[in-house]
Structure formats: C-alpha cells, structure tokens
Amino acid sequence: MHAPDGRPKLLVGLVGAGIQRSLTPAMQEAEAAAQGLRLHYQLIDLDTTRQGVEALPMLLGAARTMGFAGLNITYPCKQAVLPLLDELSDEARAMGAVNTVVLAGGKAIGHNTDGSGWRWGLERTLPAADLSRVVLLGAGGAGSAIAHAVLRMQAQALVIVDADPARAAEAAERLNVLYPGCRASHAATAAAALAAGGGATGLIHATPTGMDKLPGLPLDAALLRPQLWVSEIVYFPLQTALLKAARAAGCTVCDGGTMAVGQAVGAFRLFTGREPDVQRMDAHFRSMVAQRTS
Image (cartoon, rainbow, N blue to C red; front, side, top):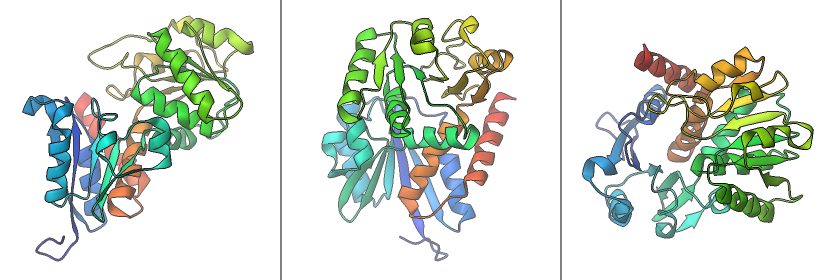
C-alpha cells in the first residue's frame, strides 16, 4: 500500500483494554516518518468499545480485510489470540503468549517482543549485570516473558516470587521443562528469595506496584544492598519508589522505559522489515514521558 505521495503506507494497531495512555503509537509513527514511511497506528481499546476477548476473531478478521501490516496485542488478549493465529515464533510458542502479530502472505504470525525487549534494555543499560542468581518479583504476563529471557541469557539461577505462590511454583516448573539445568525455583517472599543460595545478584520487578495509580514499594527497602542490580518494568513514573530506594542503597539500576522501548523496537522491525534507530526511539519515548509527568 502506498500513500498519494508515493511513500509506502502501513496500517498497524494495538488491541487491548485500557490502552489510551499507550506511548507505542507515537513511537512507531515517529520512527516510521523519520525513515520515510507513512504509518498509521490505531488504538483498538476494548474498554472503549465495551468488548472482551470474544471480539478478537472479528478484530483479527477486520485487520486482515483492511490490509493491516500487523497488530500489537496486550492485556487481556496475549493468550486468547493464540488459537486464532496461523503460526507462532519459537519465542511466542515457548512463552505461550503473543504481543505482536504480523499479517503477511495471507497468514497471521504471532511473536513476542516482551522478553527480548527487556533483555535489550538490560544489556544496553547494565551490560555487566551478574546473572549468577536473579530474583524475579511477579509471574504474570510481563514476568513470564522476562523469566524466559533471563534463562536464555544463561542465568545460573532464577528465583520467582509472586503474590500467588502457586503461580510462582507453576512458572518455575514450566521453565524447568523448557530450559536445561533446573535453574528456576520459587520462594514465598522477596526476603527469602534474596537471601537464598548465598544471596541474589540481581532483582527484577515485574508487578504493577509503583505505578501512578498503585504507588509504593514492592518489597522492604532494607532488603536492597549495593551488590544488587535492580531492573524495573514500571515507567509511569519513570523514577519509581523502587528505583529511588535502590539508588539510595547503592544499587545499579535499569528503569522501565528500556523495556517499553525495547519491545517497540522489536515490533517495528517485524511490522516494517526495517532497522529502527534505537537511540532516536529511546529519546522520543523519554521526551514523551517527561512531558506527561511535568
């Protein structure tokens, strides 16, 4: 599809609930424009249309009919979309969740850029992060994707903590089936996880705690120590209470914006087949966050 001025034109969108504050549309459209593409990014908010996951077959069919290049998928649709797709990437299949669907050649192909996006952010910000023993707080969608990424990075041990201990146990069990060495385990509390095995080297926070609408710390700040690196996924605000406490304790940190940009970078590649300018996308994202929080 081409625009009247001859430039390639792409239609993409985001399907999910409560997505009006998403910065993904602006990131994708701005990077496309910088590369001479005309890209329109449509929000398809299930809260606005008063629909649920039962609308996915219709929405996916409509996207095919209208010539969309692809769709980003977020809560609560990342698992529900699976049976509607023709193919899955290895990463999406392993995670059992999709956050990006590419529509091409008559097929809908599911991918997951959450884990790779988090990994991109950590390696860019903390390239020397010690992965000997990593504690993950949160076994939900984002936490699950990150868990896979951590083990693919050859972490020696991953300890999962969740408000639902059964979910943490199930996550560890699934991971140990997929990855060699039985490196995943679970603990009942953050304190137990951080102390076990001689002490953790890294802490990843993958719960909503610390967001503007859910302020606070996900653990006792006294548990933080200089030997820990801390990775956050919350980015509204960018400087969460956890990151402030971690810096005060002498930890090196990676903010949640890096994962937000990293997953968008991966989706841009999939939608356009082009290599994005990651520094430009990161700078644009941070300027938007600063404007919203000023």
